[in-house]
Length: 178
Length: 142
Image (tube, rainbow over the protein chains, first blue to last red):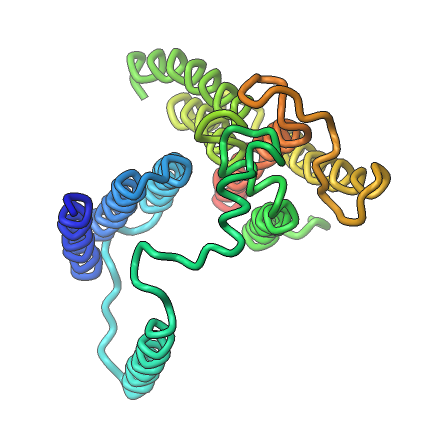
């Protein structure tokens, strides 16, 4: 019960920070508000007893913040505001429509799920009670990541690999010939 | 940057690097593992470069090295996973090495090896991206 109150407080805080990030006057404060949202997510993970995710989130958040500030340092701090045109209206309506459709299906799907905290335990029962015996790793998360779900994790690593290739390809403005 | 910042960054980056190694190697017995440890390893280098400036290392050479290690670690993970096919199972990424006593440093079969390789890979990828952001900007401004 206590956890839920803390979670609610942090979530409200994160929503306020997201609004700040949108309406901030200069981009630096927007970036810092974004970073604070990430650290709020870290606290949520810690409250929900997922230290693995919290560690990953805190280091990734710090790196992202450093890189974003480094990028801002070399570009402008002021956001360019253009007047609204007809195309913007189309974009806004499309976004709203998409939100309504997603919300409809979310509500449709959530009635099938069991209430919060009571999961269907067909597969996770095996994971939870036999993981140490089957994998030999006392860190349960690593056991799932690199034994039961190793192919998925390989795909995750491939995503990171592709990101690096994409960054190198986009940022290399000079061709190889000259 | 001033002398104080540079010196503190030098001292801290060594500690961050050692802690990153610790997180990577103990991935299978405590929270952490390849991804978070790899980011820590990369951040040690990034901190050094942010404090010392671009001319401290020969950055262009470094980028080639990081690209090499990134590709090499992915290849090794794939080979190690494909080894499961020859060790008598029907799918990739089988945990076929001896399991040992749970909770020991040398246990859990393949998992620590995957952790170390993923740590190298994540560190190399993040450092490559950071180097690309610094090097190519310099090239453009020339």
